[in-house]
Every structure is written in C-alpha cells, then in structure tokens.
Length: 102
Image (spheres, rainbow, N blue to C red):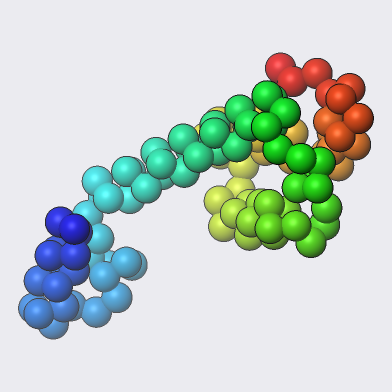
C-alpha cells in the first residue's frame, strides 16, 4: 500500500518507468529477500516430499516458473534449489525416493 503512494507521487512529478528509475533500493532488497525466502520454501517442500513428482514434468507450472525464474535471476543467493534443479537426474531420483537432499 505504501509503495503505491510513492509510485503515484513519482508519476505526478513527471517521472517515467518507476520500476527502472524511481524505485527505492529498499524495495528492491525487500523483493530479493522475499524471493530467497520463496526459494527456501520450495526447496523445503521438495525435501519433505510435500509435492508430487508431476511438478518435474516439462510442461508443469513448476518447471515453467523455474525456467523463467532462472532466466531472470540466474544462480545467486542460496544455491540449494538451483543445484537440485540444474540436474534432471535429481528429478528422477527424487521421484523414486532415492535423492539424498543435503
């Protein structure tokens, strides 16, 4: 809600492209932190077998999300999920219950 006020003020003063030029760095850091938390949540769900093996199917929403996410973010931050997802053999092992999560 608060950022909406900043966006409105930025545009009212004639600013263009708020996301690229006007956004405060603390919002960017906050977003980066939330993305890392989400990565940890996804990895934790995989470790606890809380997701079905179908998430690894090529056209699943999880795989579509992962491919788009990696194209934007690359490997940075906490690498556990990236290491797991970068090797399709891990999917097979995980599906069969053989993958030993670190």
